[in-house]
Amino acid sequence: MTCDCDDLGRRLTQLRDGCLEESDCAAIEKHLAECPSCGGLQRDFEDLARLCRESERPRMPPAVRRRIEEALK
Amino acid sequence: MAGASEEPRALLYRALDEHGDRLYAFALRMTRDPDLAADAVQEAFTTALRKFDTFRGESNVATWLHRIVYSKAVDLIRQRGKETPLPEDEEAILGPEDDRLARTPAWARPPDEILQGRQTREALEAAMKQLTPLQRAVFTLREVDGMSTEEVASVLGMEPGTVRVHLHRGRLRLRALLSEHFKGVPS
Image 1 (cartoon, rainbow over the protein chains, first blue to last red):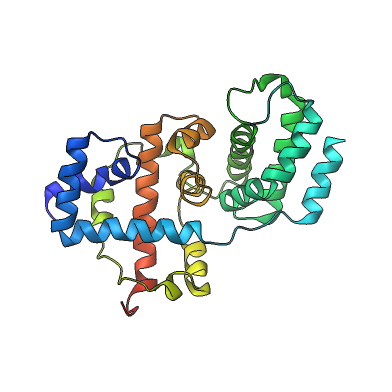
Image 2: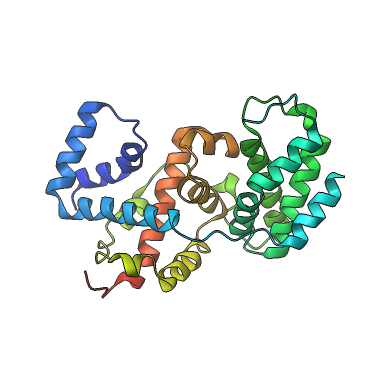
């Protein structure tokens, strides 16, 4: 990974948020396709996001819900 | 979107039905303690009822309640006094340590049955506990709850650019923490 890769790594979250200029996006996408290290970072972020989307969310225990309902009366 | 003109108790009851589980899960990830999470959510609802006149419907009620839960959870974490750094102490600029984490070798590409398996979910939960409170908040709201960066910024009272810094750092740390789990996974 080179210094350019450091810069690209910092901008991956901006890229995923769609807040980069089109020309920057194209340059980064090209680099991601060519650089195994940065491409791996991007794919790991995608897997991490997928893992989170599909993870089970803890549910509010009924006793807590009842406490809140009482407090709202 | 629920409007501010709706009767406060009715609106908050409805919010409890629609968003209660999300708010509790968020509080639990923040505090890492079921009792504290319950306190944070209950206090958030009672505060929301008491200060309903400050809710003007500019954000939706879910965002507003997440903001109050976050504030309550941070207060409880601060009172517990064991966790550092607290959100106000976090560096909001990416630096060499972040770059070093980015150089962690990429995961073996996990097949779906591994990625979605119980052991991976447990590894993710364990790794999440090692994030700082702010990283946990940003990551949970953005990646688990699916809020936009702008919504996360509204909940946490910070600029979207600052949210992205903490989100990036949280992603890097989770990736590094989970790399041991994925080591040796057949791709």
